[in-house]
Image (cartoon, rainbow, N blue to C red):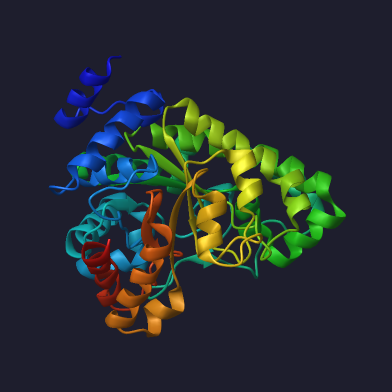
Length: 384
């Protein structure tokens, strides 16, 4: 594929899966966009592509990561936001149009996959769904052996999420970047067992946990492949427990690391960008990069081997693009001015040289006003 022809197709909106475009072409396109961005505004597609290829766009790309918070614009209930793809899509679209941003990350409640494995889920009217931990699917270690495979496209919630991806991609087109999302196998197990009990089982009964992870991973691979086929250019894998909130690093590498790598390869084989989301404390950037080779990591706290964000940029800025990391407490309690000031500081430290997208460290808190979501967008436009 000639560089000139590819650039022409990109401008005309004929975008093949980004992972199938040669690096030389992507770098040429990013360089051209970076140069043009000095004189005029880029599209969201150009802006994000330029940033993830470690070039400086016209301004820093930004996303508010509106999950349940997006439903405020449409007045959709939490249960509908989780269970009805048409209403969920409307919420995401209304939220994106109202707040703005260069990426729409389709992050729903983390109980989604576990629900289809059979875990009972509570769907309250005024908060995010969560597992009924009084009735865990995995009550004791022998229940790990009872986890069974199924077709995610014939399951209630995963099939609706795939349909959500298809609807949003069709509506948004190339006006923004849409990403799919999947909770990693240990995360899914934590929804069915409870995190504390799961961590103990990882130490005492690792073979049981690994066997269950193997079954779950097989389903998740089919699930992400179905997401890839909807036209999303990227899928994010949530590996929360690759952090000191979860397992010791070596244990995570032994139990979930290989399976996370399999899911990542399935996404890459479809030609898509792999993102990682991890909002844990002291997360393991090095391990996640080694196992999943992501193009981007969304994070809420510094990795375990970095003392400050300048060290983070220096150590990992060439290996992976960074998305983050405005703190949730600041979004909940801070004023828009305080949020914008923090965004400016993060932009100053992380944006030089590209490879940075401004956003919250995790999903925007769903029950607070969207004022500070808009403040992040304004900060990118003003300081980025």
